[in-house]
Length: 215
Ligand SMILES: O=P(O)(O)OC[C@H]1O[C@H](OP(=O)(O)OP(=O)(O)O)[C@H](O)[C@@H]1O
Ligand SMILES: O=c1cc[nH]c(=O)[nH]1
Ligand SMILES: [Mg+2]
Image (cartoon, rainbow, N blue to C red; front, side):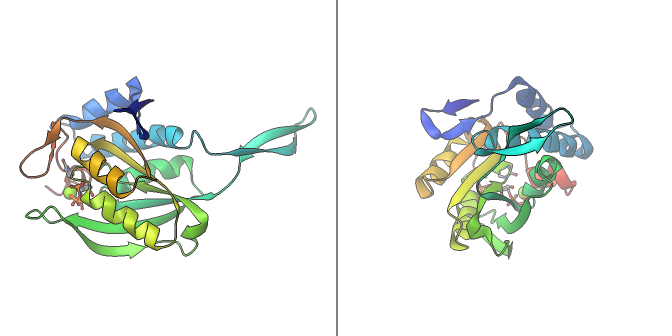
């Protein structure tokens, strides 16, 4: 885990296991099944890093041997927010290790001509203002979708937000950090740039289509 470009608000999860799995996901011959499975696996590894600084508190428990004080998670409860569609690939892996987390959905698609995010669905837990939100979208390209998703979570009253992506472009990181400097970004890789259609280069293609087999 390292800080990206000297910005402590951008955490690069550069663990070799994550990098290895991401390389397989990038390959154009990787199947829908493989892509989906790997995204779920990487999601668990990302969750491990995202939750590294959550507070714990000591509670009294009894083991079969003796009574003792041991740590458990404390503080704000979690809400995972999936940016549809591709965010659901990260969501399923995160729920494997955080099965009690609340879940919200923000439905967004990118207009291919303007690259602006268009909202088509929104459902967030009513008490999200009392929770820490972890917004999930594997691709951070122009950053327009990420900014729109975080806007919605903030409008719902949430003030503690992290953003998790699998793969980012430098442009997307800059846009999200400028719009929401209080939101820490976690990503497994930062690629070279965007192409003329707003796709990450070299990237992995369209994450939603690869995850659901829609192309
Ligand atoms: O940073 P941006 O330039 O906004 O691009 C990133 C967005 O593009 C993809 O969604 P897409 O619009 O393809 O929708 P989908 O997940 O339904 O395929 C991706 O999952 C992000 O939400
Ligand atoms: O490269 C990209 C950019 C946006 N959305 C994707 O799914 N892939
Ligand atoms: Mg897509």
